[in-house]
Length: 194
Image 1: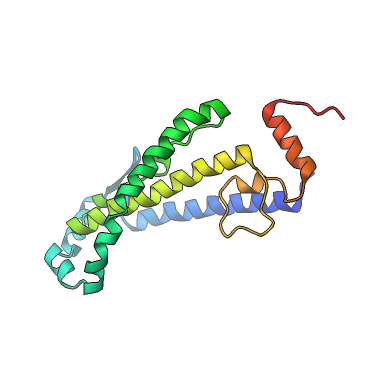
Image 2: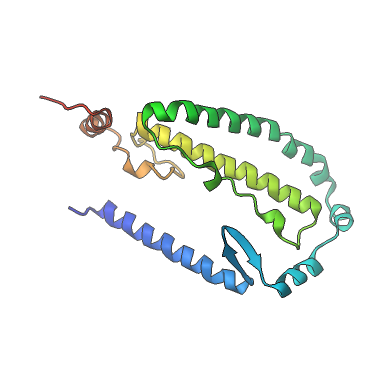
């Protein structure tokens, strides 16, 4: 029996496919194609990018003082991010096989490729590496946390979540004790008799 929620999920999947098709179409507008997971620009586009690159001195020279002063606070986060990466990766390696949860591929989340753009100067490239790592790491951690939550406590919140992870739709409704019990029993391979 198809429910209204199933229809909405199906429509969301269709919209995601349409979005991906639109992104693929735009790649042609920017004169690049994907080959073995890497962006390859046409020869003329790469030269045009080099011509449009702003020099490092000019880039730094026009920066606001407040941006320069706050930059160390941004870069200081690399240590906690790297520690988070280490601890979450070890957690997943140790616990997911025990729980029977499929591991999250780190490379599917941490994507560092923008530094290859010829129109970026050295500092912009460094910033793009940093942002690609940190935002990808948050995505990686979120997926690991989402899979963990789906395994241990797959219950929706009473109050709606602002941006729930991909597994949330499969959770039991808040207050659905029987649904939760059935989900836990099926996960653990148990049968309820009576």
